[in-house]
Every structure is written in C-alpha cells, then in structure tokens.
Amino acid sequence: MSASDSKISICANAKINLCLDIVGKLPNGYHEIKTVMQTLTLCDTVTLEFTHEPAAEKILIEINSDRLDVSDIPTNDSNTCCKAAKLFFERIQRLDKTACERCGDIFVKITVQKQIPQAAGLGGGSSDAAAVLKGLNSFFGSPLDKAALCETALQVGADVPFFIDGGTALCCGIGEKITPLPPISKYHVLLVKPHVGMSTPEAYKRFDELNEHSAYMHDAYSCSAVVDAIQSGKDLCGLLSNDFECVVTGVADEILEIKDALKCLGADDALMTGSGSCVFGLFKDGEKCAAAYSKIKDKYAFAAVCKTT
Image 1 (cartoon, helix red, strand yellow):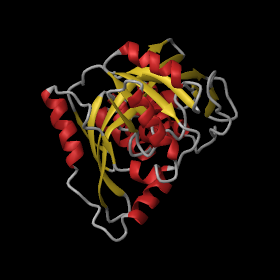
Image 2 (image 1 turned 60 degrees about the vertical axis):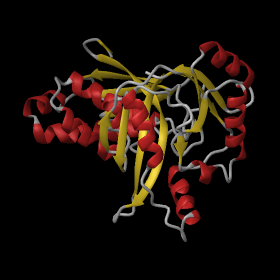
Image 3 (image 1 turned 180 degrees about the vertical axis):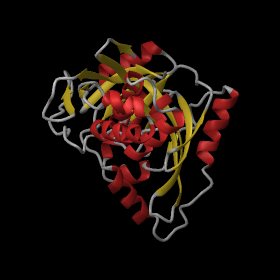
Image 4 (image 1 turned 30 degrees about the vertical axis):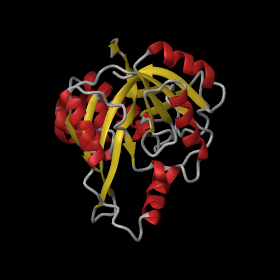
C-alpha cells in the first residue's frame, strides 16, 4: 500500500482455488463449500483519492485497463467498490464519532486499473472491494478492527473477507469462515481464460440439476488432502480438484482443451478456478511456464504469467 495525504493506492491480488468442494446446501438456499484459496501476484491497482471539493456523488468510480475490455463493468452502486465504500461509511457512522466527523465532508474517487479479467473465477471484483475497505480504513485512522472489517467485507460478498489478508487459507461455509494456512511453496502460474464462460449462479444451478437425483453432498475429501499437504509442506500437484469443472466443461469444451494443453506444455497440474472460466497451470519450472505462455497466449481470450504470493 502506498499513500500520500490525499491518495492511497492498494494492490488487489487475484486468487485461485486449489480445491473446491461443494459439500451441502444451507437452509437459506446458499451452497456450503470447502475450498483452499491462494492469492497471486497478478493484481488490479485500486487508487483512492480524497477531496473536500464537492462532487456530484460522494463516491465516484472509474475503471481503466490497458489490456482488458472493461466497458461493461458498472461504475454505479452495483459496483463492488462502491458497495464496499458505502458500507464502510455507514458502519463508521454508527461506531466511531471522530472518524464519522472526519469523513462527513470528504468525497472519494476510486480508480481501478484492471489487470484481472472478469467472470474468470479469479476474484477480481471481490479483491477490489477488499482493497477499498482496507484503503478507507487506513485513511481514516483504522476505526474498524479486523473483525469489523471482515464483517463489512462479508456484506459485499462471500469471498471478500478472504482478500482482507489473502495468502493461503481454507474457506468454509459460503466462503466466509476463514482459517489461515501456512504459505505454500512458490509456484509459477499460467492463467488462461477461454472465450466462453458461465456466471456463478448459473454454475450452481447446473450443479444442482446434475445432482438432483443423487446425494452430491460429500465429506470434502479433496480439500482435506490439499490442506494436509500444505500443512506438511508436501507437493500439491496431483491433488487439485474443483466440483464446478464437471458442470462448466459440459458447456465449455475449451476448458478441458486448455487443461490438456497446459499439461502437454509442462504444467505440473492444471485446474479451473472458482466457477470458471479461467484455468490455471502450476509450474515448478519458471522457464517451462514462460515457454508455455508464448505458445498459448494468442489462442484464447486472456493469458498471463504470475506467481503464488
């Protein structure tokens, strides 16, 4: 995080799911999951600029990118950054009189320089929202403690609390129950996003349809194996799994095609992240990762090389 008297810039890291088990359905209709999330060096840059000069809105959003089409990302109240900022201001109005008085006549412009593609399963919007919360909290003298910050993050979205700290973590419930894990060995990561995808609600709907007549609830064995490997410092390759793959690959053949291509190009393992549609390859050898990128980068909608944090 970098800061001046009136500006703060924060890196909003992407994430991948090293495993994702759908283990049940809650009474409120949400799905219960067990997943291990891992942040990456690929990141958006979120900049908060503060001013006392009146603007049309207390919170202004601007989205830019030099590599992605961001024309369909909303800049109104539905944007996750705007939601996060509004929830932050509402919360400190209730909790912290001093901070509330300070923010009363301050306007904030939030500029997001996007590097993380949308609808990819990389958590870009959620990470941006967490960056806004962290930036606002820092600027106003940390009126929210860690617990309050995570509670506010959860109001924005289920995986936003993970991005408050990032790193490696086991996430359960709807993703909000977070248990930090030891850092994993550094892997080189090649991200590849196909031209097709599916929204998270649609992925869950299709998952339910596929499992309507079967007991799909299970004991999250795959994630247990990943957690055990992380805690004992063992190699993760060969243990990765994602319950959404069987759903999304049924309508997106490119995903299996990319997985196979990454393994043929030297990836030690490959998996779709989240509800897709981005696929990541884990490489222990950085030169192999770079060579694979050069061969695959022009074939699909998005490709990037990064590392686990």
